[in-house]
Image (cartoon, rainbow, N blue to C red; front, side, top):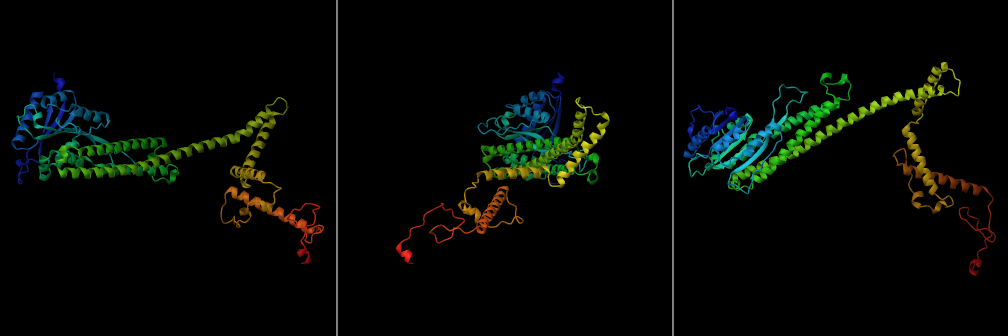
Length: 504
C-alpha cells in the first residue's frame, strides 16, 4: 500500500503580511514550504484546511504553489480528496509537458466560471550551460509549464461554510518557478501582495512578468546565430586562415543538423508566443479580469510586448534561413567540385580508352608495343586542344554565345525580303541615332539589328556607285536623267504636257 503513495511534492502556502514587522527578519518570505512524501489524503487535507482557516480569519486569499518532484497517480487522488472540482487535466498536462516536451497549453474559458479559472502556459527558460565557450552552443532553450487555478474557498472540503474568498493554486515541476514567485512576493514588496489580495486576477500579469523572460531567449539565439555565421563563412577558407582550431571546426553535415535543431526551437518559441497572445486576448474578456482597470492595462501592456517579440522572432527566423541556404549552397559547390574532379579523371581516361579500343580491333594487325606511344599521343592531343581553345577565345561559353547569335541572325535574315528597297523599311530603324558600342552593352537582338543595318547600307552604297560609274541613260522624250534609285518601266511613253507647260 505504501508504493501507491510513493510520490514527492512540495507545497508552499502563503502567510499573512500582518505577521511581519520592519525589525523582524526571521521569516524571509511570505511562504512556508511543506515537503510531502508518503502522506495519506486525510493528513494533507487537514493541513490545507488548517492553513485555509488562518487565511479566512485574516480575510486573505490562500496562495498555494505545488511543485511535483516525483509523480505517481496517487498525487491526483490525494489532491482530489482535498479539493472538490480539482482540475486533474491541468496536473496531467504539466507532467506530460515536462516528460515529453510537447508544450500543451490551455487558455482560460469565459463561458463557465463556476469551477474557477483554469489556464496552462509554457514559459521560456534558458538552461544553464555546463561550461562557457565562445565556439559552443550549449545553452538550450526549454519551456516551463505552469498551471494556474483560481477557485472559491468552498472547494476545500474541510473549510468553513460561507467562505467567499478566491484562492490561487499554481502547479509546476521546476524549482525555478517557485523561487521566482516567492521572491517576487517577498516581504519587501507589500504593494504587490496587497493588490493580489484585493484582486486575485493579478496573478496572471504577475506570472507573465516574472517568468516571461523572452529577452533571454533572443540573446541566446543571437549568440548561436553569430557562432553559426562564423562557422559557415570559414568552411570554405583554407585551414591556415581559420580563426578557430581545426578540431573545433564542425563538419558541414553536423552544422546543418544543428541549424535544423535551432530552427525547430525557434518555431517552438514562435508557437508559444502565439499561444500567449491568444491567452492574453482571452484574459481581457474574462469578467473577473475586467473588473479592475489596472489589471486590464497591465494585460494590454503584456499583449503589446508579445507582439513585439513575435516580430523579433520573424527577423531571427529569416536570419537563420539565410544561414541555412548558405550552408546548402556551400554543400552544392562542394559536390560540384567533386564532380569536376571526376570529369578530370574522365578527361584523362577517354583518350586512353579510345586507343585501347583501336588496338583491340581484330581487323588490324597493330603491335601492342605501339599502345603506349599511341595513348601518349592521343592524351597530348586532347590536352593541347583543351588548352588551345580557351587561349583563342573558343571556350564553351563563347561558342554557345556565337552559335546563338548566328542562329538569331539567320532567323532575322530569312524574314528580310531582298527585293524590298531600303526606303520601304521602317524609318525608325534607319533614322536611329548612332550607338557607341564601346560605351554601353546592347542586348543580342539590338546588336544583330545594327549588323543588318550596316550590311544593308553597304549594299545600297555599292549599288549607287555602280550606277554612277555606268553611262547616263535618258528616256526618250524625257528631259531629266534617269534616277538610279527609282524604278521605271522600260519603253515607257513620254509624259503628256499641257500647252502652258510647253510655252514655259
